[in-house]
Every structure is written in C-alpha cells, then in structure tokens.
Length: 170
Image (cartoon, rainbow, N blue to C red):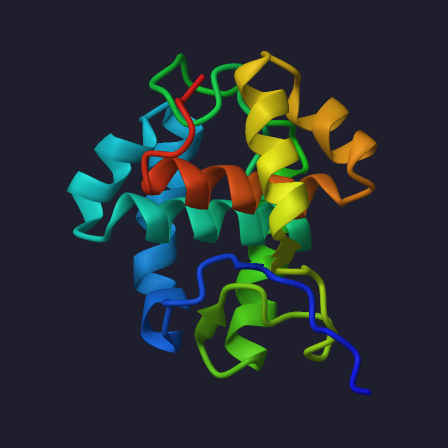
C-alpha cells in the first residue's frame, strides 16, 4: 500500500526563472525606490516589472541579506524615505561584489549554494487555517507560529493568496 501524498498548494508554482532573474541594472532602481519609500505598485510601474516580481525580489533579498532592504513600517505601501545607517553603503557594495561573483545576475531564492531556503508546499488544511486566521486579523508572525511554519514561507503564501484574491491586503 503506497503512502498517500498530502493534498496541497505549491506557492508560485507558475513562475519561471526569467521572472526570478534580476541584473545589476535592474536591482539598483529597486533598492533606491524602496529606500525612498515608493510603494511596490510605484516601483513596478517605474521599472516595468510586475508587482509580484518586485515583492518576490524584496522577500528574497530580505531573506538573504536583511541589511540591503530594510523593513518598512507600512510594508509595501508608500511611506517616508528610510533613514539608512552609516554601514549601509558598505554592505550594498559587498552585495554587488557578490552579485558580480555570481555572474552578474541575482536569482530570487537561489542563494546559500542552492540549499532549500523556503518551503513552497502547503497542505490544504494549513492553507485553509492560514486564510481563516488572516481573516480573524491575526498577525503573520502569530499565524506562522501556530502553523509551525517560517515567517518567510507565510509571507510568500499570503502574497500568493492575495494575488489570487483569496486574502485581503492589510
């Protein structure tokens, strides 16, 4: 008797590598606009990429290097420019050097020698529980803690569900 595979959802299963690929020239304006307080919608309009691509880039960069893209009080919405610490530009230079060492392209979620850094599979029961807790107004941190998932995994699921109209933005 074979084991039953869990029924579930693969987050962003329809993405191809082109969507996840960014060059040095494409990254520079994203970093600038993010730090200047532009919304994700404004950034995507300025650079000609989709909001999903911009959000995936931001989440991936934050997971790999939390110094380059600082968290913002209003998340993806428009806000005041960030006050960058003195060491920011040194860290940015290190990031760009690493990018050059990787062939000049940044691939979202393709860091740490291709070790798995995110679990994109969610069982249906956990997706339903996630949606219900979100609708109750629980924080992403609380939801992920209760479901025993990384916050990063939950952020990707929330964004994916939001893109499909299954979650309201907050």
